[in-house]
Image 1 (tube, rainbow, N blue to C red):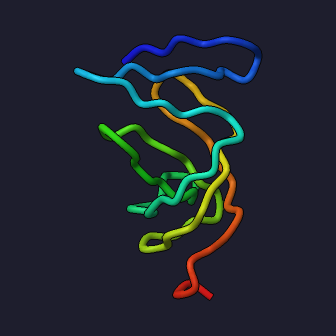
Image 2 (cartoon, one colour):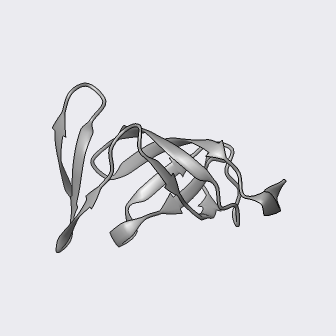
Length: 87
């Protein structure tokens, strides 16, 4: 996977096998937390398996998240709204 970036935040378009994942800082997306990582952060996947790390997310959560930083193979996001089932 490669990413074309501009600016300090790693803004860009992630190029994933046979296609692109357009994901930029400031974007709000609905995701499903699939699992947790070694440090306890939620892990979601968007188009073509691109990984989004969501601190505070738990498996099964379906929050709206704001993308904060985009890297070559992972993005970092914060929860802006949790699904009603998680409350």
